Image 1 (tube, rainbow, N blue to C red):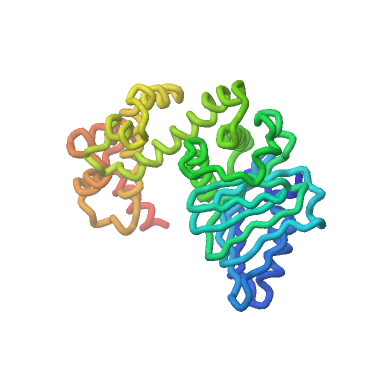
Image 2 (cartoon, helix red, strand yellow):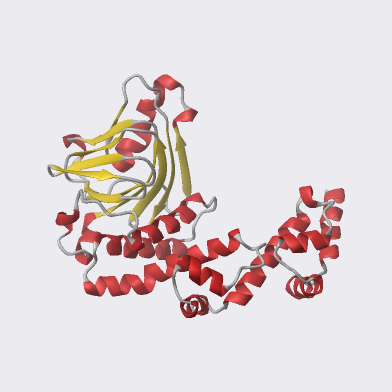
Length: 328
């Protein structure tokens, strides 16, 4: 497999870090030739700009990128790899071609391309994409006739694809490095979801459904909870409707992690309240207002839960933070 970013660590690349005249060559050397194994041809007469957030995981590399209008071409010079590229076209219209096939891609569509064959991907407008580079030999055993799905459109509304995109955005936008154990787990989930999106064998589909789909659904639900902690309507019923799954399934997802929905939401709200209490910009905010902003409707319940969780009252935590600032 071709080189990928250091395992577990987030890597950012942007042509903005280079003079305009050097940007195309910088992209070719840093990302095009080393990771994606393609060359770039920007649209004539237009300034070229590209950025990538990348992360290396066990047996795969993932990236979230942006590019101005350009053609990315895999020539014979780059067909000595054993990898395949799973490409998700996040916005705008585009096209990819390989094996005398051309696939048109709209918002959210995906396709699979081989690293051992020539081909091209065209972004006629500024485009954001998500890429997964992985060894062909690890994907082929779980997808019937993998060669038949190369350069074929995977529609944006494919369930496994939607879950994969949400899951990887969370992974790629995180600033912290992943431990080897977490990296292995994330890699397994990504392979499961890719296999399902491509049309896995029956056995692989069942395995992926149990592992990758459950993990991605739980991650999506947790992200939804974090975005709506202050809402008084936050409930299992609301999430079941929004994610189109049953309340029982949501409860089972949390139970698989040794917790439940109520305890998870309480812990998340307490953690948010703690962050607000020690943040400088909220130093003058009333504790009751902070409790409300974190999602608590009952101040007495908030105070009791906070003290049980942190071993101190909200006022004590704020006072200790102020004391550390004065002595620091």
